[in-house]
Image (tube, rainbow over all chains, first blue to last red; front, side, top):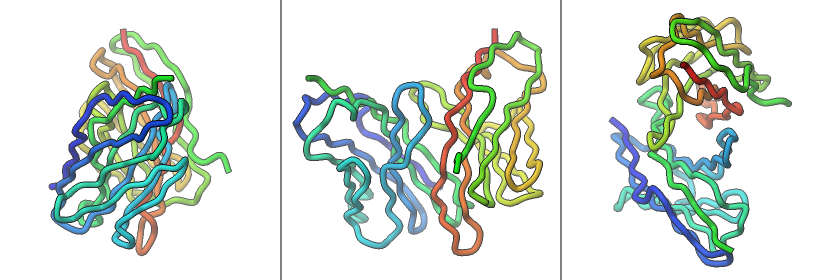
Length: 114
Length: 115
């Protein structure tokens, strides 16, 4: 069975400083991994996706994530936070063997201070 | 392309009332999904339809029914609403099938309150 753990429910950063959102996953097979962002009262937007090609994945808005199989991690980073990055972020795993059903982490809410 | 659209955006029901949430996608995707989002729990899958004409239960199907009306449309019905069904409901679609992409695209959500 697949599962996802987001290690921080809340992260607070100052504008212009780096952002790190931590995610660990469990999967029986080679998974697809995603990061989605949800701004207040909005739907989910895909930030980036890993599908067994390059282990460092670049996404939209300056975000990137690194897949580390040995650590079963898929942490999301951004070098310099912007006020518009304040949102909730979800780490998600999908397996073809599981019918491509998504399993979501509990979410990390990011607060950006001026 | 509108992507994935959902109606209504907001709804308030009384316990025991019924309603149908509508979802449509214009990306010619094969698979469609219904999720509910509750605080601190991420999104949980209610039902999904891997292809036109098929539907399957997800993680939390009790109290819900679905209909895959055609390739574009996938509706979610609450026959007798309960306060525990107060949530935000998201519809999603993905290409899948064969070598298709498993990336899911989400609608804007329906915020449902059951009193």
